[in-house]
Amino acid sequence: MGPLIPNGIIPEDWNYIIAILIGFAFGYILEASGFSSSRKLAGVFYGYDFAVLKVFFTSAVVAVIGLYYMDYLNWVDISQLFVQPTYLWAAIIGGMIMGVGFLAGGFCPGTSLCAVAIGKIDGIVFTLGLTIGIFIFSESFSALEPLFESSNLGNITLVDSLGISPYWIIFIFTIIALVAFYFSDWVRSKVKKVFY
Amino acid sequence: MVEKKQLNRHVYWNPYFGGFVLGLLIILTFYLTGRGLGASGALKSGVVTVVHTVAPTHAENNVYYSKFIKEGESPMNNWLVFEAIGVLLGAFLSGAFTGRLKLKVQHSPKITSRRRLVFALIGGVLFGIGAQVARGCTSGAALSGMAVLSTGGFITMLAIFGTGYAVAYFFRKNWI
Image: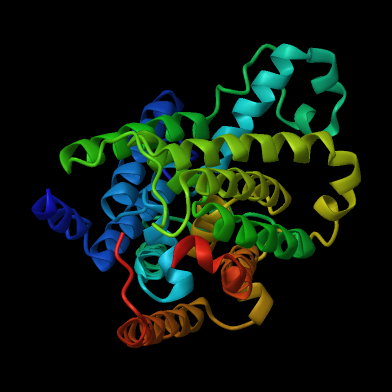
């Protein structure tokens, strides 16, 4: 039963080869979906292109349905999958800083790597900025540590937070995604076209 | 030339198809490794490696860097670093197949390349800081988090997009 590498079904030696192959597919999908273009990505915030919303939410819905279905079939043990611990204020404030960074720079780390790969100079500069940002964070860590380490709620999921069955959460999440897709098409039909 | 431009606009995948394939990839990644995808982690490993090489004592005395420094093992010896190498290769190949390989600055005709690059740098710095504060970026925290219903993943996603919409007005000249 999965996950295969942690349970020793695929030997640990394959880990890095699998990492490159998975990364390869990830980069290919992002670039082919147009995520190497900052103007396409920014479109989601101005209503002229909703590719980010559609790709992001379709993949999240497909992944969560698939993983829970595989858990139901006993192909994978969902409790063994890594859930990032929730540090409430760090998640909110970090997310807000990333939101401003997204609008200023037009990329996020994964998409900027794709932009670098196809020769976008703005992507190269953004990626350089990322490393400077990581450096600034690390050098000022003693000042940021209280925020970084505070309000640790543990490795919680929405099942713990909301106290309802995961299947209901997935169902509601899917409905929200479908409504968002429909709404985004409506918005796009009202907004002035932007060509890039 | 004009014809090529028009072709380029339609050469991207349908977003629902792209999202579906990406969803399958996330499932496969969790099924194989027990963890999700990531992107900023590889850059963090790079920064830690450079600082540790240039100023070893400084890095070992810093509480944050020292979390990622292990005796006798390079911080580059990390799953996410190999994944990021794959991302570069995969994106390069997709760009090569579709004729998108080109050294250029992409920006709105209303702004100069210089302005675009200044904002790209500022945005990168902010995103780099934010991704460390939140322990992951759009890929690692938000997308992979949502796939396992992580509460933090949903909060980070809402904070990124909510703030994005809140500040979009101030950056409109750069994009529309």
